[in-house]
Length: 389
Image (cartoon, rainbow, N blue to C red; front, side, top):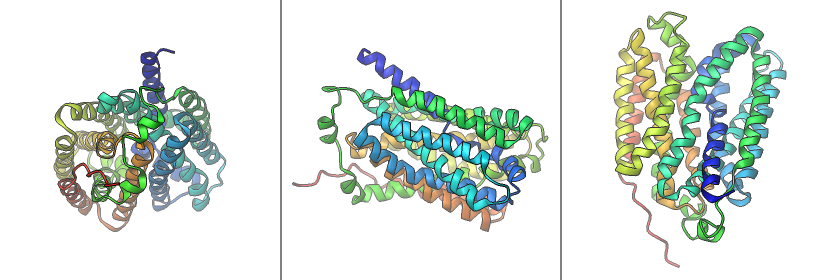
């Protein structure tokens, strides 16, 4: 296949794969059906969500390492298998056994999604090294839309036949679509971006982990999570309690998903033109302001406020991979981004603790403060100086 055609195929395959990995953004539509089907408390269902996001962050590091050593196809195929297995095992999990559900669903589904993400993002950036933000956005837009896809899937199939049938069907889709999409992934050949050129263009993970820039970025990624993850498991209940008709409550997830897709497409492309840091500053400031608005939103404005937060959070998550490769190079982009994504794990655990310890009203102010702290963490970040031999 000609080089340009292969690049387009990689983008298309990456988008198809990303359609399946937006479970965190759509967990609000999973929460109640999972509680009913498996006789879980709210805390147990929320823990399943927190462990899934934590496993995603940890898996990004492992998946990135596999991607850099074995190639994106190998990592992607393993990701599709783990994601599909997580769904299928969830379908067979017994009622009332929350620890087992975490083990057979949350962990493999989080790891599988994480193996797929670095494989897609790093591969797309290498094919379009001059437009890294745009390439990240094109593949990431499907991840934003996955919330809408999963909402329709869960409310349709799950509503008719129950969550076990829904999980089994999602397992089949993940294996088929994820497997076929991953099979298309392939790094560009030399001289475009061979292994030798790749490694000459970036810091190795051990070098990156020692830099102050990594530590500040890690903290910023973690602090971006609470403005959305403090609320996403309970968004349907929040929307209903704020005066939104019950039939409209699920649209909070759909609108949030559409906004997430827009953020993932537009923000990275905008960062190609305006620079990563100015766009990230605007996104963190918007998360803080949006959190304050969300605290007072009622009725239909709940949808608008949550959609704005979803758009900004997704935009931050989509700009981060390009920012990471700007700072530390493309040579180890997969594993370096994976270590950066560990911040998502820290942020998910922070959000889970906040959702358990803080009343709803206090969560909004915690979310705004978290976003402002994340913005402050970005201020000292500069490209690291090359180490002397």
